[in-house]
Length: 100
Image (cartoon, rainbow, N blue to C red):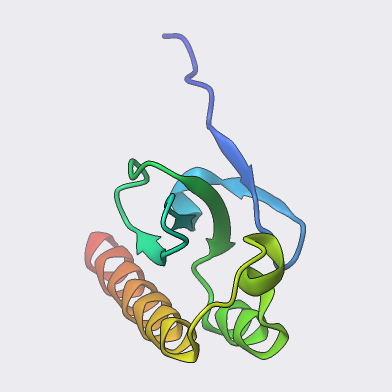
């Protein structure tokens, strides 16, 4: 059986390459609205960040998405991002423990 190629993306906070499924896409649409894109299919300029709370907090502290998207991003977005990443990390851990 042929091995499938794993799509890789770059985490904009750490600069490391990681499998796409271990990252979450953040998108800026044409109206300069920045939001989390859990499906990875929203139209607009996208950037990826690791599903790690420490990295999300680092992005919040450094205001990474302000620089990447060249726009002023609301502080509430960063709070929502940290909450989303925390939730996804907890879900992943729960379901991985369930498999074993």
